[in-house]
Image (tube, rainbow, N blue to C red; front, side, top):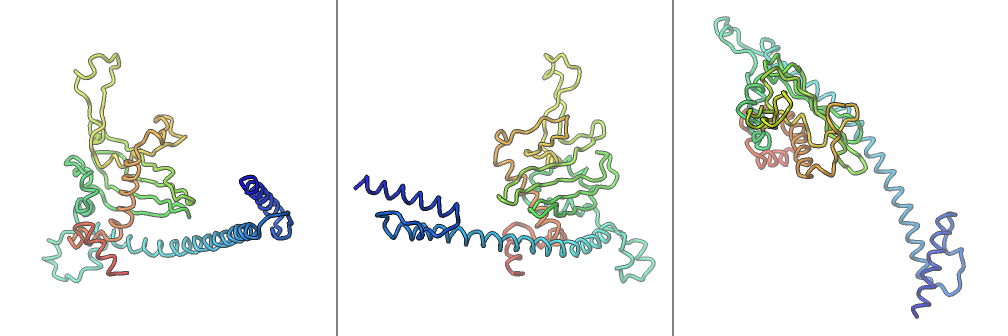
Length: 297
């Protein structure tokens, strides 16, 4: 009995291989003593494969149309966000104000100070990253933008700063590259911050006792908690960067990679679109935000 079943199994393999190679129906191949139900399985396998190929074609069309749709509305959202930024910075205050009293107009405050700092501190996942020292630098944050990088779902965050005594950069970027087939995060890349001397918020200088045995005169530093570590992500490996060694993905805890990506998505999907609601206190936690999203669907 076992020998007979083995022969059937081998013959079935021949049926599958030949029929798939030459794209012919298995029933055309006549093998002695092969049960009909084995032919049915072979036919089912071939049909299922064809259906899956059709599914992939339709799925590709869906992704293509979604990409075009996202491009269209991203431009419209960008226009609204640009106008919002001008209001927050006081650029269009006079145009949008109905105040005609000159005396009151002189006492009016243009723009909203510390808007983005307040917004981020109201979101728990961001508030836990912001230290007291960070607040001084984030007071100069003028705008946060996001844009798609490609059709795979990758995106970029852009933080715009006014002239700050902490670093020379006027813009800090964070890019996420996504593998569409996964989807899997391939790489996260942040802008290198050019700190002013003595103003670095991400590193602290160790006391002389800690570097007594070192022959290097250069002060030793250690990582310190800071929101600005967000721009030095755990999965950051760029072949063009000679200063930093490549990061081995196997050495990076998956929890750190996932949290870094989650923070980026929170800023893109929750903070930027609903910044005013976070600022006014309409959104105070994640549960309230999710409830609002469900109501608007």
